[in-house]
Length: 164
Image (cartoon, rainbow, N blue to C red; front, side, top):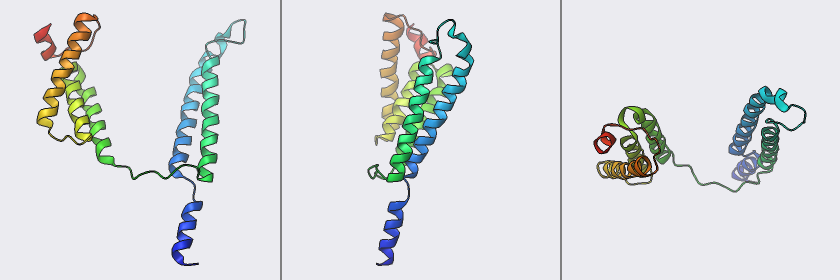
């Protein structure tokens, strides 16, 4: 057996790390649910069914999925994944962060237009000088529909105050 084959078999025996991370996240979410539900345990009243019943079931289901994921990771049952491209993810996360920071001071249209432009950049359209203004116009139309016709409250900024 050549040294390259032994490396390949060693890699094949190694558990899928990404799947183990997913299993850990599932357990963490279940733990948060169980801790949050523990405050509701005394509210069941005269019956055993109360506001904590369904969240308990969800927590146990997440634990079961985590165990299933660990078993599949150890058996290497997951298909090979393509290499992850982090550039597009960074563009989209930057857009979400910009929207959260700009929502109050700049309003819905500008903040969400910036999110639109940066998300478009993440998908390969890097002309921000086109995508951001197009996103702002689309979001202004959406804001006018939601605020005017549906009477819903979205954050208004200087651009929205020009129209309303």
